[in-house]
Structure formats: structure tokens, C-alpha cells
Length: 269
Image (tube, rainbow, N blue to C red):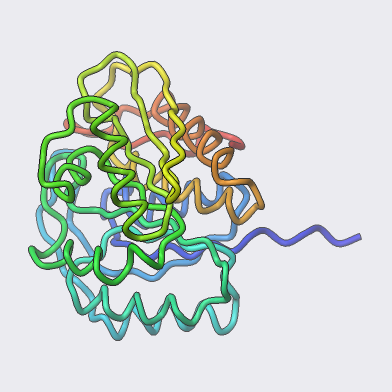
């Protein structure tokens, strides 16, 4: 009897030259969770644990061609979207998503800044992502600074996070996972809110470490992979958070700033 083929995950994101985030983190995550990783690279970055030194975006047409090449021949069971540098890329990605089979899970991490604090997208890109992609997403995974940017106010407790996430979920008809890793609390609290307002809280003890480069990329790629495996959304998030937690614990200690995770040391979800 032949083995069941792995789920096919397409990551649409930027390349991280240092290997800790972006496409590189996605490939490691998808592979470690038993998926088949494909990529549509949106930009090449020169970056490391201390910041982003340079960004060269690719054209929207070329990003769309990468997506089409994967869809037409290999097929796609789930999509993870990360860094989309500018409106041209965003418009082409939005059109490409409309060619996917109905019901294909799309996990959108609205990347604006790196863990180091360096900006990753053009000033007009965030508005374009909201206008063109949020309604096409199954799940949005904003971190606290990104959620505050969209809400245009500070969100310094879980109640305010839930309220802002709920507003996004209702407006765009998708689930929103508001990530609380940027708070100062001893517990990391993430809040999942559905379009109907149903909320679920996830929490774990904070790990005292500076090695968190690529945590958002890793989480969103893990959720997409687990959805493609057939896991329900709420359980996929539980398993993905556990994967990220263990990858942080296994961080190799590289770099003088916010170093990469230890994806290769984690097995399963």
C-alpha cells in the first residue's frame, strides 16, 4: 500500500538571508510538521538577528507566476502568507488566491515589522493588505503592534485585544488570532476570535530568552500545515503554539540579537 502523500503548503513570503524567519522558517516548519513546502518569494532581504540591512522586492507579476506554477502542477492544500512588500505584489497575490479551489485554507500573517523592530513593507502596503486580502483569509495572525496599528489605539490588556480582534473578525468574516507575545506579562496570552464573536484564549508561560526571531512566521506556517492535515482550526492553533514553544526552547543561540529558533529539534505538533 502506498503511503499517503503529504499536504502541499504554499508559503508566499519574503526570504530571510540569515535563515531565521520568512520563507526559510516556513520551509523548516512545514517540513518538520510533515508537509510538502512550496514557495512564492515576494522579496529578498539582507537581514540577521540584529536587524534588516536591505530589502529588494520582486515584481508582483513574478510573484503571481510563482504561485501559478505551483498551483497548476503540484497543487495546493493550504496557503501561508507573510511579508508582502508593496501594493503591486498584494494586488497580484489577491488575484492569484481567487484561482485556488474553494475552501483552501489561507493563513495571513500581516507582517509589518521584524522581531528586531525593523520595518519590512512600504507605507501603503498595510492598507492594501486590509482592503484586498483580509476578506480572502481563513485566519489572520497579527501580533500586538500590528493589531494596535490597525485599531489605531493601544491595547495593553487581553480585553482590549479581544475587542480589537473581534472588530476585525466581524468586518472581514475571518478568524483572528491576536498574539500577545509583545506584552510584559509572565504569561503569553493569545486570543482567537471568530466572526460571530466567539472567543478562545490560549496561554503559556513566557520563556526568558532573546531568541525569538521568526516566531510569527513559524506559527502561521505551522497552523497552515496543520489545517492542511485536516486539524480543526482551534486544535491546529494549540498544536502550532506548542511547536513554536518547543522551537524557542531549542534555539541554538546564534546571533548577537534576536536569534533564530530551533525548528530542526522539534518533531511533530
